Image 1: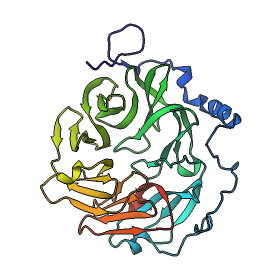
Image 2 (image 1 turned 180 degrees about the horizontal axis):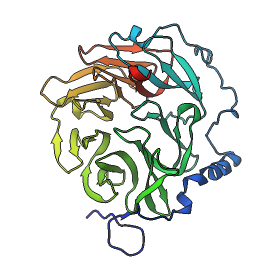
Image 3 (image 1 turned 90 degrees about the vertical axis):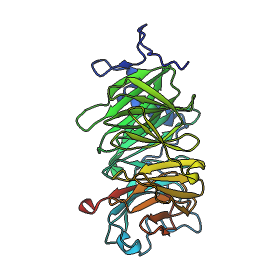
Image 4 (image 1 turned 60 degrees about the vertical axis):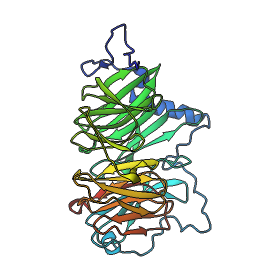
Length: 372
């Protein structure tokens, strides 16, 4: 029998809702992050590369000079019909991170991001506005990581001992993350109206991390049981389901990989997507902004399925790099990083093209026309 037990006192409650408590755990307090990371760096074990104190990266013979961008025009000139600007994170010569802003009309330009990268590279996730990023960097000889988040040019350390994080699936600037301290998995939320992260709940007997959240609540990925644990918006556990969370949508639907792709409702219902192509090993998934389509990334291709009808599954090759997807604001295009460059699929006609092949990308976000 699966047991999730609150780690505070002897109360039999499954988890403890800590919203009403004014106390904070000193070991989990995010403002201690600078001290902890400073000690790690001082010991010579850190992999964090901060702006201003970095060494110039080595340049591979076939790589362009830092900051060099081929003349390509706007993304609207390259991908016909694309409606938005593109925000992307690139690895400069395999070392530092840079933000690339590619307007609908006009050449792409870059800004330095004061965060190093892990090897192999980890994904950099944009919030729904495309204006904030988050990334989790490992610390050598430890299973937990250091969470960075914020405006790309001014990211800062949010917390240490972090197991995972997730941007809110529909509202910008809202970030959830989990830390693991003294045998407890602790859920925190960062909101723009809070001076410091808010402790939501804590639990034991869950070996994993927050994987998705929205107004519907939270989804933990329990790695030990290969299961999804659903929580209410106040942090109380309400259901479990076998599989792995790939994506969530604001109405409360989650895409879950469970020997095939299922749609799991935050209310407990399950809908199987019975399409043969969705039985492959799945790396990532993403709902379109209107919730009518789901893009699924496998080891060697992208699949797009309509959720409102029985139309054919769109299927196209293009080996992915970092497992991440993003949709254009009109739901017509879906993009993902390749081993080099970006693959862009036009779901209107199924065409796929590869762009910016001289670069390596670790994160993609969309800036709708009004904000680009």
